[in-house]
Length: 314
Image (spheres, rainbow, N blue to C red):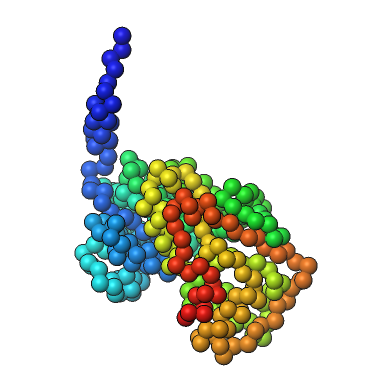
C-alpha cells in the first residue's frame, strides 16, 4: 500500500521544498512601482503602520528626476529612513537577484508605450517567484460598461477593449496581473484638496463651462484612501486577493454639480463661482459604484466617506 505521510511531515516537506525554490534574497521587502501622489501616500502609510514595522520599501520610478522630492515627502513623518529607498526601474531590474515579497503597481499608463507588458514585466521580474506575498495593480472603475445610472460591482461587464482603447489598456493590464496571481483594485475618481475634477472645473472652466449634464454621476475616492485600500490588500494577502478584482470607492456617489457645491464650501475654493454645465441634458448619466463586497473582503473602509465631508472639514 502507498505510504501515507502524516500531515505534519507533509507540511515540513512542503516548507523545505518552498525554501529551496525561493529566490536566495531576503523577501522582507515591498516594492511600490510608481511614486506619484498615490504611491507616496502608500509608502508613508506602510512605514508608519505597526503591522509592517519589520518591512522595508523600495519605491520604483522611471527616472531619478523626483527622487529627492519623494524622499522628502515620504520621510517627513517620524519614520526610520533606513527602511525606505528610491530606485529607478532600470537599476532594480539590473540587480537580477532582487525579488520582492509584495509588489504594488500604481504607475499610470501615460508613462508607458505598452502598459499591459509593463505590468506583466513587473509581476514576472520584481515579484518573488514563490508568490507568498501579493501583487496589487491599481486599475480604474472607468473600465465598466454601465453608463446610464446603473449600479456596477466587481462582476459587472467591462467595456470592449478593442473599441475602447483607453480603457482597453487598463483591461489588458488587469488581465496580465491576474493571470500571474495578482489582483486588481479598480479605483473611483481620485482627488486631494488640490487635485481632481473640482479643481479643474472651478479654476479652468469658468469661461468655457463643463462638458456633461450637471446631474451626471461621479464616484470618488481620496488618494489617501486609495493608498489605504492597497495597504488593506497587502494585509489580507494572496489567500484573499489572488486573481481577484476589487472595486474601491468612498461609497457616496455625487454629481458634477454636487462636486462643485461641496468644493465651494471650502476656503480654498470659496472665491470661485459655480460653472455652467453644457449637457446635453439627455446625455448618459453615468454609473453608481457598489464596492461593498470589496470593502468586506479587504476589511477596509475609507477615512473620508464622502467628498462633501472632506470638503466641509478642509
